[in-house]
Length: 316
Ligand code: NAD
Image 1 (cartoon, rainbow, N blue to C red):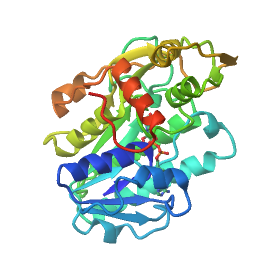
Image 2 (image 1 turned 90 degrees about the vertical axis):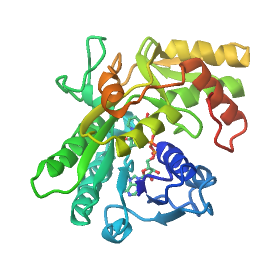
Image 3 (image 1 turned 135 degrees about the vertical axis):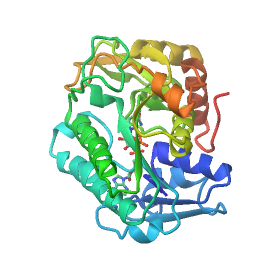
């Protein structure tokens, strides 16, 4: 079962699983009949043999019947995004990132599903000194979103630590995932879109913020490895190894379209840390995973997909 299957990463994951011959039940509360983004994300999945889509809210749907033959739950459903988490939408973050995870985890345990892979986030680290974060580092989440992701990760791991829980949990701390069908609020999407359309780009802060950009195919490969690696348990950093600043992304976007990009700079927003950088050693050692796509090739594939917004283009 893939939760959040109508979302950015979830739809790529479901597609990759189907390609490997796995039967997938996708669950998402966004209804493709009424939600254009969900419809676009699911376009390559609907009607494919082996894929069944359920439109349901994990906060109140019956989860057990969906897990009757499940070997793995990929729990990617959630409300992402740092900035909106400061406002009145916080209750939505708590509901979808914590309460829904609790329901999914309880159902996993009741139905004896052997493994649950849960989407956590690099944001759980909070501000760092600029060095690479290791899973054992002290965690200082700096936004309400990050607090809910840390709670989600710890909640699932707490269930798994119970002597009577048959479900093993792997929490993946994704670092800034980008690629085709990326959420439109994310910086790389906005930068590439602005470059293609010749429109100004709104940038929060001076652009020197650095991120460990992870191409979506690499994030998906790590997620599948997390489901199958025999001894995997606990938290893993999933960082693409492309440490770059927002200005670097802008420069690549400009070079890809061959023209300048007008920037509208706005003050940095609370909770946006200066640097995220993954130490990926544990994922390499235990999951046998290594990112394959560098930032330039990844952004090129992302831009090609934006220019022709249908399909599942690879960055190779
Ligand atoms: P997304 O918004 O594209 O996908 C999330 C999906 O979850 C959405 O389709 C949404 O409808 C669904 N959902 C939310 N609440 C639900 C509920 N209660 N019941 C059923 N469905 C629900 O986001 P994404 O970028 O694909 O992120 C997927 C996961 O990865 C999220 O948990 C996010 O926190 C995490 N993550 C993403 C990134 C990134 O860079 N994209 C980085 C770190 C962590």
